Image (cartoon, rainbow, N blue to C red; front, side, top):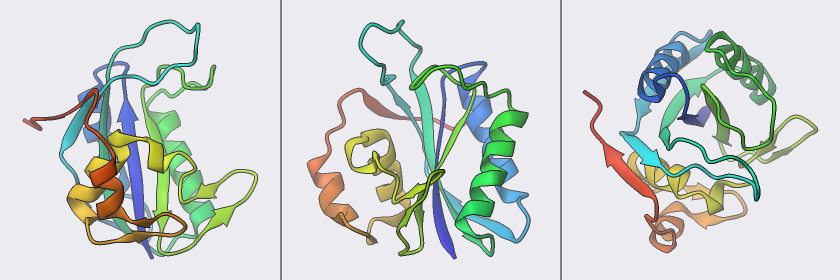
Length: 163
């Protein structure tokens, strides 16, 4: 199954966190990392009255996996935990955030998982990296990724060098 994973970090050397996570994705069982986007820097989304945060480093990865969506989620959370992820507050700063954006053409609405990702259409730091590696796809319930990318601005978002 083709799956797209959103990666983000804004703590403890965010660029290195994202690059390490890409390596970990490539080592998942029954899974191949086929492609990843460039890295992007984005302004942090925060809740009202929350402390300011560092900018995020983001990317999107394309996987081919035999894991179910739920199994994939468990492995992604294990990678997050291994890289020091602590869940203290919604939209809080984090060492690593891995989200299943798309899982084939499937839609999932369970207690633990929503696919396509519920906030995908609102997040330029997901739309533009996803468009970079899969510009011709349609997103279940949302339509053409190309149209979403055209409608989504670049405010607070910039492509950065991998080096």
